[in-house]
Amino acid sequence: MELCDLAPHAIAAELGDRIKTARLNANLTQKALAKKAGVSLKAVTNGEKGKSTLESMIAILIALEITEQLNFFIPKQEISPVQLIKLKGKERKRAASPTKKKAQSKDIPTW
Image (cartoon, rainbow, N blue to C red; front, side, top):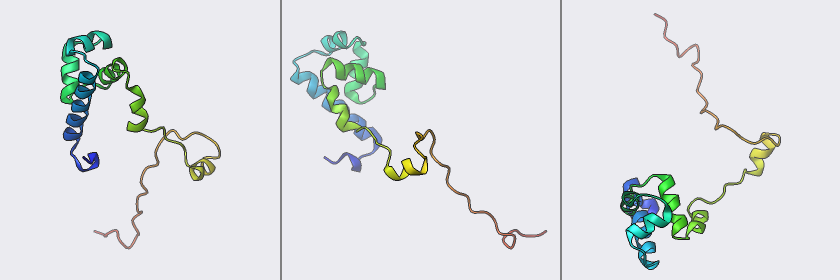
């Protein structure tokens, strides 16, 4: 299944299904996983539905010992060499706003 072809709610549901499969593979009940993760049972059930908070999801991943998967989920981003040269070695803090096309004086109607 290609996740890039799915809507956000469908991707969240797929991630929830994967969490559920990981829990079952670890032979844990939802209640046992909740206790191990330090979250509520509702947090686990919501996680398996793809409706979890980020912090609860991370706690569940830690309890399932699958946090290394996060490196594949969102790989660490490096600054491109071109950007580094433009920034003169400084770390980028903000994205640039799109350039606005300035109105030409002939484009401005006179009333």
